Image 1 (cartoon, rainbow, N blue to C red):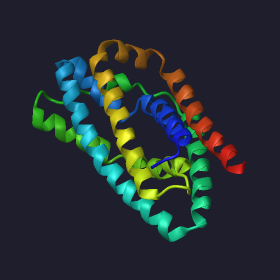
Image 2 (cartoon, one colour):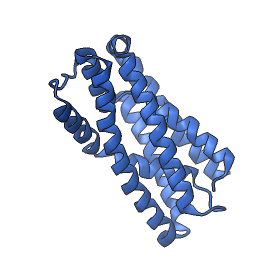
Image 3 (cartoon, rainbow, N blue to C red):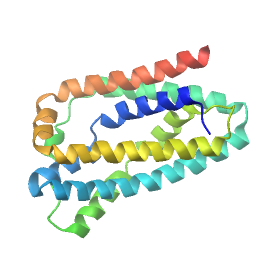
Image 4 (tube, helix red, strand yellow):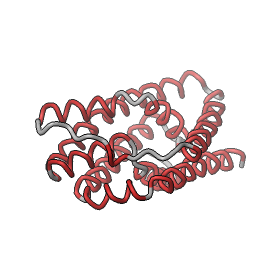
Length: 205
């Protein structure tokens, strides 16, 4: 179904990148601190639902590109690697945001799920990120569609596990994000740049 070495590399890279806190994590922690871990996990359900939609859209798009672009897909992968480096550099230089100041949603199951879903779904960078990240691990020696499905399911599982961990450790996580905001940007930016450069070097070989 998929090259084992590429798959393990994908799992490692995806784990590192999902750990990077963003709007989803900020909202999860805010709701957990305000209302308890149960509501943090409810927020994870909302962001996870949006993630499913995004992964389906990205998977359909990538599958179509692989079949229509042929050799041009290699150029797309180079562009994707460059995009990851650019994102990392932008994050490195950006002023730190205090993610701990995100206001929690009102204690309503429906409103909490709805807001979490749309916060995650309406992030314009998400589909671009998937489009840049996933192709780096696709092998031409195997069928494209099964590889994309496997990566999408794996990515979803890792995201749900790690986001749930943020919800369950919200108190300490909130203090950590607030205290080390600058280093969070530096580390996150370095990881993104490293992923892009690493994929570019692998491509050149």
